[in-house]
Image 1 (cartoon, each protein chain N blue to C red):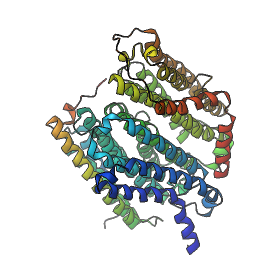
Image 2: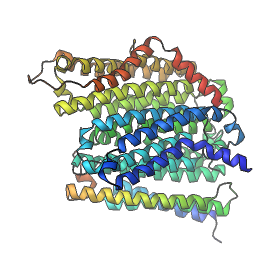
Image 3: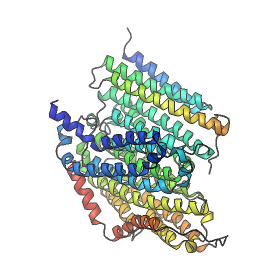
Image 4: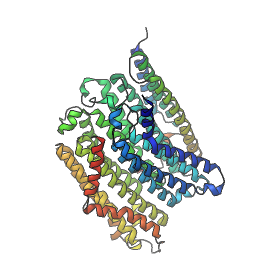
Length: 497
Length: 101
């Protein structure tokens, strides 16, 4: 490779360099005087902000020919990676607001720096995951993301539930990634390379080679654990319930965005291009039918188990499993519309899940409970918070006039276009079930009488502003959705999908 | 003459033993040992594949990556298990179940 080419290649990871630099700055701030260490959240915020700006500025260059130049590069920065990186960074920026209001995390006073170091390592892993274009770099990025996640889940050292969540996450996560690594070695044996570019077509020749089938299943298992796809989801409810609320939010939103990014890239690489453009899939033994199967069981298990939950965090864990089912459904189509639906869905998913978790966090800091039964009558005690909760729940259920409806609508469009009728029926059925349990929460908020008469502390203006910033876009996009879909189409077109 | 197949059979046995250990063992430390077996099976696989076939990727480099990641994973895992022992006074995976439906 020429010198200019190498420089060009190194420049694909500029947002990551910024994150690494700020990570080191935070480490040094943490070990210096207390006065300096108190500034860590501010520095962390400006680091993420700078990374977003740089990612946007440099995105223009990356759109050009990067991917065509060298399909074997281990990291690429095309439009597809950019759209996911942007979502990861933007959600990380909101996360810093969450951390400042999470009393569980803040109760460990001297360990604030440690928390931000873990947070930054996770962000670094997510960014790398979004641009990984090789099975080995995807594996390394997955570990860079997972290792700090295990520690962050167990951040409340003296809390039994938090340390248990950490152990479960650790054992399940490392088993899944170890199995995935073995799968990668099998794929390398049969394909001769670990690059995504060399995987073309292996998803469609499944009956031919038992090594490829095993390798594919093992790798799907590794990615499936990261996005908590059934049957690799067993860690999710326990980890989500045990970890501090802010860590739960980060794991359920940002880390899944990155996981979906790399999973989508892997699936797209393994489908042969002719099949992709044809748009019609024959449902023999290929990666699409495997994904259709996983998608159906993922939504069904997620939504049906959510009905019986009483802990809000656990309920949202199962509901997010249901949402992942929809995203995998869009991925199973493998068509252009399916690709369009994934970032759109994730964007809306980010907004509404952040909103729902912020409401849970604020309620927890007031009534010290995450149990739905303790939410009785809150609709009259905290009117603003509850109205916001209504917006988020209606959107999560996927009903108009919120943006959640459009997110599901585009998935349905893609499914119908690919003529996957069984999947469409399962998806409609699951939407109905989802409406049931989201509305049960709203019923508790408004139609059940509160046990106590105590007056709860009111929300600060800052809290209201952030809630409104998450909730109002959902309503506006619910009515006027075309800008989002146009933006997604533009970005993906440049990426060459 | 030792060929690729010998290595593949060996790594399959290692992998199966590791997975078996992860699934059946109750002590968290033993589960971690099973995980190490899985990682080492994969690592050996990469080196053997590079040695006996003409693949583009270099398995030796990949196995170095794996060793580094396995080491950091073990460090983090032991720290988590140690903290767990302080809270629960045992490291038996079956008995640590305060998170339930």
